Length: 151
Image 1 (cartoon, helix red, strand yellow):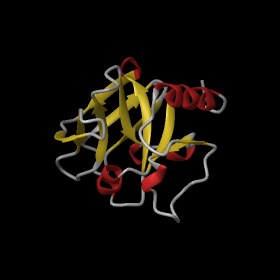
Image 2 (cartoon, one colour):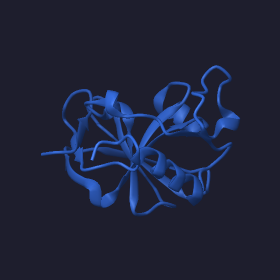
Image 3 (cartoon, helix red, strand yellow):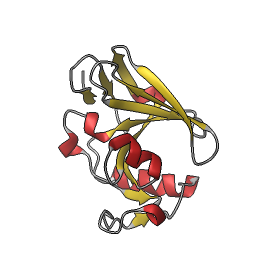
Image 4 (cartoon, helix red, strand yellow):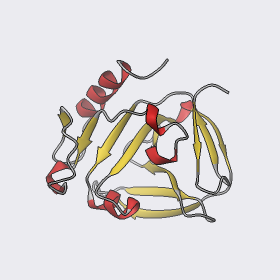
C-alpha cells in the first residue's frame, strides 16, 4: 500500500495514511508532558486519508487549551502515543511524527505555542503562533507543506 506508514515501538499497532496536511512543532505544556521532551511533533491528517489502522489502543482524554476534549490513543503494551483527536478539528486527526517509519521524510512547517517554548527549543520556523492555531495558520501550514510533500 502506498502512503506513509508507522506504528508503535512493539509493532502491535500499525497505520498507513495516504497523505498528510502538515507537520507542526507544538510547544504547549501538554505536548511536553505527552512526549517527555521540550515539544511535540504532530502530523495533521484528514480522517479520509487514514487507509489502515490496526491494533488495539488505549485512550486518555484531557481538556485542551480550547476547553474542548483531546483524546490520545496509545499502545497498551509499549506506551507509544500514536494519534490524538482534537474536538475543534473534527474531520482531522494528529499522529505523532515519531511513530512514522520514515520520520526522515517529514519536515516541520511551523511552530505553535511559542510563548511557552523553552528558550533553547525553538526550531526557528518562519510560520509561528504564540498560542493556538487558527484556520489561517493551518492553511498557511498546508500551503507550505504542499511544496515539499511527496505526491
